[in-house]
Image 1 (cartoon, rainbow, N blue to C red):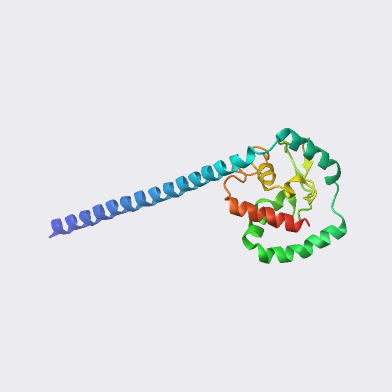
Image 2 (image 1 turned 120 degrees about the vertical axis):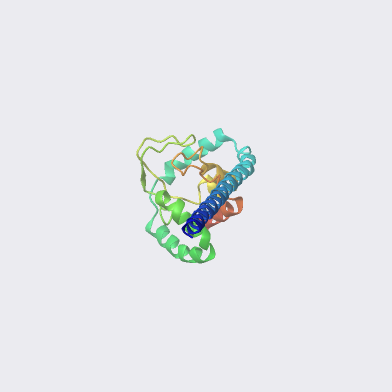
Length: 189
């Protein structure tokens, strides 16, 4: 009787061990598949944006950006800040997910209203070499990103904005980026 009971316990433990191993293998495989899917999506998005990047004349863009910073580094007026505060209430409702994305990923440097003036240490990009530390300028409708989606994507890409998260905008799909571009254009009107 004891032997049968001991065999039964050993059998139950073996079944639990094998079942647990199978479950763990399934979960690890599932997690690896999700990560692989995310990597594939980022690669796909990067390929889409590379075609946009090829359209840009970098030397001309660099000249334009440096010329703009002579006037755009100035703080926003009180009137501009009030307009943006009013616009933000509408934009939060119209672009709910985009507002969340901006709040999580962009506002820490550009400010809730795109007012800038936030100090970033060790910030230098290929297109905007700056001494460190540096204060982000306000986002303005006169800046070149405002009129061109491809320039907007280029300026927010990891290779030009080293302070961004590891993937920059490459991990964000094109539709979401277009919404972010429209959100910022509306905020800076």
